[in-house]
Structure formats: structure tokens, C-alpha cells
Length: 56
Image 1 (tube, rainbow, N blue to C red):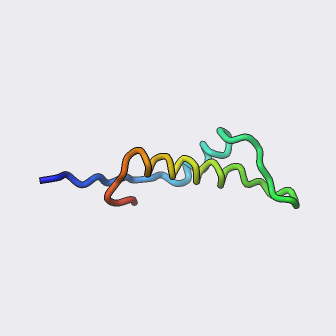
Image 2 (cartoon, rainbow, N blue to C red):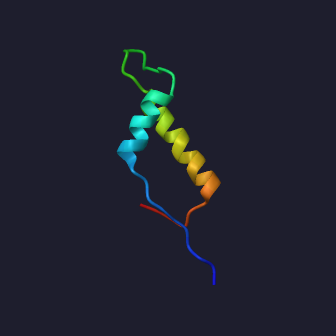
């Protein structure tokens, strides 16, 4: 019987880490977007590497 893989994500922690780990990016009017970009990259990497059956 195959075991299911569940991933629990602490979104606040990941977003905070992404903000400081990613170079500064911003929109044309100066709003920072580096945290969103870093968070998305980290999340996609996690999904690609772990291939979970469910995410919380």
C-alpha cells in the first residue's frame, strides 16, 4: 500500500523568508514584489521536488 504524502506549509514564515532571500523587485509604481516572486518560486520548487498528494 502506497503512503500518501502531505505537506503542511507555514505561509507567513515562507513569505518572510522569501522577502529577505530574494533580490528587490518592484512594480513600475514602486510596490515591492520580491516576496511574492520568492514565495512562488519556493512553493513551485517544493511541489516539484516533493510531489505531495495533498497540501495544507
